[in-house]
Length: 322
Image 1 (cartoon, rainbow, N blue to C red):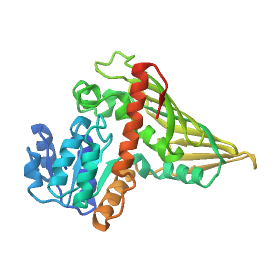
Image 2 (cartoon, one colour; image 1 turned 135 degrees about the vertical axis):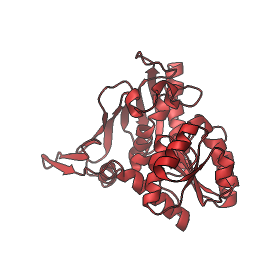
Image 3 (tube, rainbow, N blue to C red; image 1 turned 120 degrees about the vertical axis):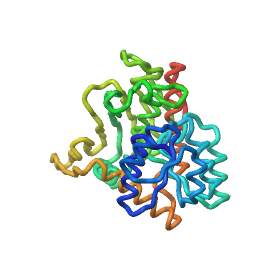
Image 4 (cartoon, rainbow, N blue to C red; image 1 turned 60 degrees about the vertical axis):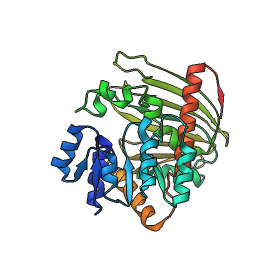
């Protein structure tokens, strides 16, 4: 585990529960001490020292601006690699990572864990099977107050608050961008308005509103923020034959069938940690079996590229072709 902040700790716990042997590294002494005392794993200050233990795989759970250099280090050490989202803060160096992984016959996966959420996977299945016919429009929402994300940490010191580290709601909240691609395919154009509107002490945009045209014809609106005091993560998809509504917090999927004029409510509520466990199970299976990850390096690159197009649109005030 390279990086022992909140997501690194979660992955360590889950990997240990799945029977993996874990060593970790972190440049921050307080993180090293927490992991050592609470999770009982050996931890190093230098990544190179952890890689010297010859692990089968490395998870990169550090700020986005450091992802690719650390992924390269792990690949060179012969490790399969899992990189937390977003893949990076820009597209520079991704092709080199792809070539290195290919040459060494190693897997690179990217941590878009919402694809492992069981209720959202049901939405994906319904859309794919034509439950509402052709998707025409959708609204995806994510909002949560940044100081509540990691309450033990001063939010002003988090990478989310830092422009240089790859923070901001567009990159840090890019789960919605990724699962929009998962549901609707590739985008053709995007327009975005994003800026800092709150009194939070951050360098980055805290609200983003984007409209995306997808190749299949659907127009999708994505709202992201880290100023909302309560928590919201949900989506609504309107199709030619009905509507699907999904609420992450409730684990519910509601299908309105226009032909039957009937509404079906599915309760798929689950332990919030289950999708992270499933994500690690899948990655371990890929490492052992050599199969392609659900969220491959290529998929992670495409979601990052679309997020960066959103930032470009917000900065230029123009609609951007993808």
